[in-house]
Length: 416
Ligand code: HGY
Ligand code: MN
Ligand code: MN
Image 1 (cartoon, rainbow, N blue to C red):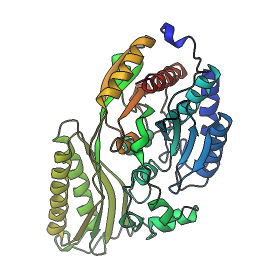
Image 2 (cartoon, rainbow, N blue to C red; image 1 turned 30 degrees about the horizontal axis):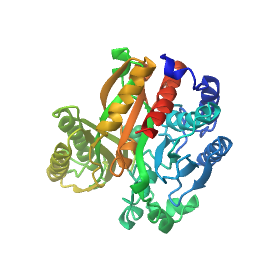
Image 3 (cartoon, rainbow, N blue to C red; image 1 turned 180 degrees about the vertical axis):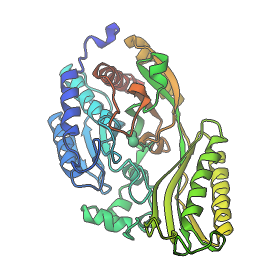
């Protein structure tokens, strides 16, 4: 590590202790390290983050969208600020690092700067974004979207598989829908946003790089497909007379895979598949599943939507099965800020870390905030490229390198 890091000491012990404290707050009846945003233990984890922020000297609030926001006043009376943060909610069966590294790292950066007596000119705003992972309504980055003013009453009317609206689900955890819609922030005073995050892929480990500098973040297009057929006896209903919703859904799931396989750096995934009745000797009357496409080009994502919708309708037509495909608003690919990327590259070189530039196939709050503020992401390697699973792992030495980079990047951006 280079000389410039010597005077500011990020404490690996504190970082590790915080990571494991959050890892202990999980839904015990679910696999991996599960802490879903609308789940039972998220509230306890968020109380812990609030306390860490306050102990680090941040003025804390929770905004109308459930985002935890900590502010450290800067020395300059400029009213300008730098924003940094990530999320602490997980997918079901997730790991201990996705998002969490970015929140723990941001708080540790504040501690390290204060202990070194380094005061920024800018205010420093640390955010634990609410509900970054897709919820049962298929909507991800809920807190950051609310912050940039992208959420609408239409989003609040989205239904989960139980017929509950998003507004109802939020009310159950004390988030008022109108407060959510009013949580948008005036970003005109924010000069840059940084997010530290695990790569969640294999590239950095393959390259032997300690730090990843993200050039752009994937676009995402999610949908819910519903197939309505007819229940029949599995033994007596002739194959040619069936209206098998399950087969129509299965054909569409394979179409997701086929369409995504035809693109460049594109991905397609189907999940949450439900057959009703779930009986081995009854022809499936109703089937539904959620799916998504990802890619670096918005135009490809729009074409994939059209292709998939057509494929689903064709699967339905072949079987006399009704088809509905509902698309969520497309999340456009997000280029990171060139000047922020250059500043990050200078910091990494100054610290003596090896680094690679890369595209992020994972979505992040930074993709949303980047629509308002020059943004950058710092990645640290994921062991075996695994994430969204219990095997998710990043060595503490790599997490510490990421937090050190984040800390010095804030200093560098403060001086720009
Ligand atoms: O799905 C993602 O890429 C992110 O983890 N929400
Ligand atoms: Mn994730
Ligand atoms: Mn994440």
